[in-house]
Amino acid sequence: MNIMHFLTPKAQVEIINIDSTVRQGLEKMRYHGFSAIPVVDSEGHYKGTVTEGDFLWALYNNRNPDLKKLETVPLKAIIHRDYAAVNAGADINEILSTATKQNFVPVVDDRNVFIGIITRKTIMKYLATVQTNLE
Image 1 (cartoon, rainbow, N blue to C red):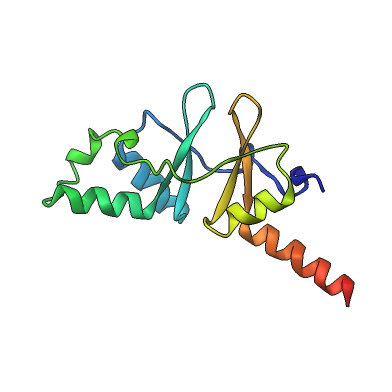
Image 2 (cartoon, one colour):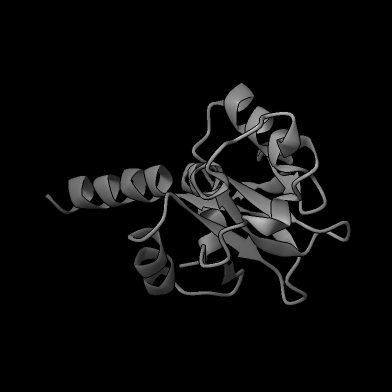
């Protein structure tokens, strides 16, 4: 099965540039109510995902967090690089395996350019439909 069937295209996904600050990332996450946001560079290459946990650890490690200081801390200093992306040609098993470890699966093309995400919710809806059709 072609995984592009499950893709939410980047035009419908909130992303943040790696050159943004921690404060900008926090504001974007708060405004949209997300727990994780894909991070790209100026050319659209996927660089990782920033999560609520990344922000919490950044605040904790700072000991005396000064929110004004967060305007100068670069997002790339706290970014979660272990949030795996898959290539658009990946098979469904790779998507399922990756989705068990994270809220969504970033999808990139052959040049590592971010093209969208596949959410766990989309995968679960598909699997529920398949299960219903088998009964």
